[in-house]
Image 1: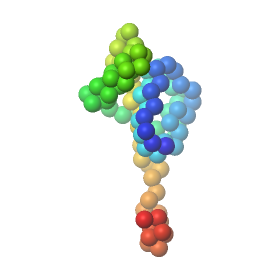
Image 2: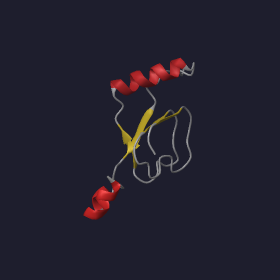
Image 3: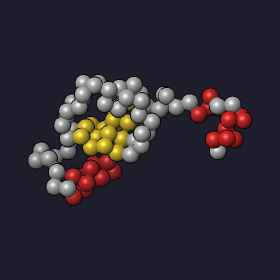
Image 4: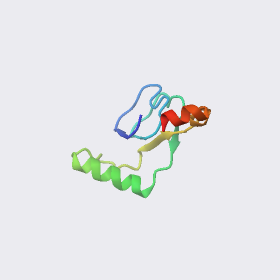
Length: 92
């Protein structure tokens, strides 16, 4: 539900279905992203992190990472405010 995944190839359908939080870096194409998974903007920080990690494991693609897409949670499924005040006390 949280963290980072790096996929250098293609992915099937519902790649990030109901993703709560986190980031998926996708080097290929996905049949579908899934419920509430949306394209995100690749920042310089993302590129630096991805480059460092891929080089660390000798997996840096010959063509670079310009083709890699970022997928993030759309956060439309978050329902924290649906808790009753008494329930919030139990959760906190």
